[in-house]
Structures are given as structure tokens and as C-alpha cells.
Image 1: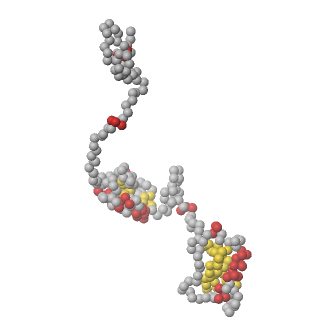
Image 2: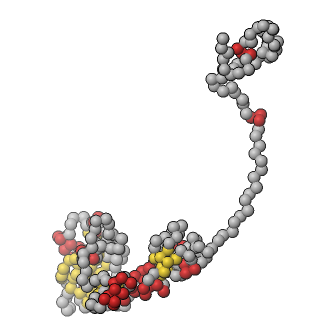
Amino acid sequence: MTVTVPKTDTRSDAVLLAAAGLARDVLDEVAEPDTIGAHLGMDLLDERLGMHWFECTSPGYRGWRWGVSVARVPRAKVATVCETNLLPGPDAVLAPEWLPYADRLAPGDLGPGDVLPYRPDDPNLEHGFEATGEEDVDRTAFFELGLGRPRVLSAEGREAAATRWYDGEGGPNSDVALKATAQCTTCGYFLPMAGALRVTFGICANEWSPSDGRVVSLDHGCGAHSETDMEHPEPTPVGEPIVDEFAVDVEPAEGSVHEPAEKPGDDETPGHDETPAAGEEPDEEQHGSDDPVTD
């Protein structure tokens, strides 16, 4: 970073320019040790008055600069130090701008159990309908029109809300609305609002929509519009499943009570296919039932 005299100012003062060493010596007496960096130049503030700038190398003051103002009297050949300063540069790290405690709560910060203080002079509100004493008039205002509140939205409050909603995610310029093929004004799930905002806004009642339960403008839209459709591709035909029987190993189930039949000729024992002689009881293994043979 280099600080130079502005191009529109062609003045120069050789005596003040030569006072850079004097300015550094004065800083050595007031600055924290090892926090004075390179000389950045000098600004001529006025006739015979200049400001020498030095880099501040303190870790906590990145982008800040030491400033030493010097001056001289007419026709003097020696400059005099006026004051020293530690000032922020263009890329300095600064503390946030002071904000009163009453204004620090931003929209979206309110959590469970939080209560906002009462604002008697809220510009977004105005006095609501006051009872007139006439039964018919008061009944119409309180019950049919939904009034009876101490304060209602003022014209300024309605305009602020409408601007915020229209420029937000429920307006026509959100990403989902720009890609929609139809607008909310023709959707069956669109519920118009009551009152003056009815001509511009309503409520989305489609649970499939990303705007469900939110305020949307008439020219908002999304892919869950009740009257739109999409191309339905033909199903891809799938052939009959092919079972490779040669890749299947058949094994007897666990706990089977039957042994595999022996091939004829494996031993001298008659096979299971032989018929027992007359008067002989059939063997258990030759019985046709899974139940054991009882005496």
C-alpha cells in the first residue's frame, strides 16, 4: 500500500518531505515497540502542513497506519511535529458500526420465549377501528371485518410488507418462479388474501410446493401447479427373466430325516423300490409317510 499526494494537488514542500526521519523518531517514543513499518509517503494537507504515513505492523491492527503531521512557519527550513495518530487505511479491520441496543434484533432473530418491547410509535401501525356505540356498525367492524384490534397496519406498513414479499422468495423473481411454467393466479391451491393486498398476494395451500403456507404473489409459480403436467415417457420393455439352472447348486435342507436314495447295485441291501414279501412288515424307510411307523 502506497500513500501519495492526490493527482489534483500539484503542490509540494521539500522541507516537509525531508522530515520523514523526524516523524519516525517521534513515533519511536509513543508507539508500541516493533510496530512501526515502512514509510508509505506523505500527504500535503494544507500550505506548509503535511502528514507522513508509516505502516503499522501490530497483528491487531492490520491495515492501519501511523500518521505524523508536520508543519513549518513561512520561510523556515526546519519542520515541526504537530501530532501523532494511528488511523485506519482503506483495507483496515474495523469494529462494526455502533448500533443501539434497541435496534440490534434483526428479523429472524426472535426465538421461543423471546418478547419484543412495545413500540408506541411504530410507523408500520396506526390506530384501528374505535367503537362508535352503534350496535350494527360495531358488530360489522368487529366480527365481519375482523377489526377490534388496538392498532392495524398503516399504509406505510402495508407498502413495506408488500415490497419485502414481492422481492423475496414468494415473488416472481425467485429461482423456483423463473423456472415455473404457470403462475399462482391460475393454480387451484392459491388462496387470495383479504384486504388491500388481495390484488397482489395470496397464500399457497399445496403441501407439495416449496411455498406451502407462505405468502406468494399472483405472478409467482412453481412446479406443483395444479393445472400443469409433464411428458410421461413410455415404460421400457423388460424381457422374461432367465434363470441359469446350471449355476444353481441344489443342497438338501438342514434337519432332513431322509437320506438320499441309493443307486441300485451300490451294495447288497435291497433298494427302496423292492416290494416286501407277503406277511412281512415294511421297513420304516419304505413307509410312504413322513411320520414314523408305530407298533
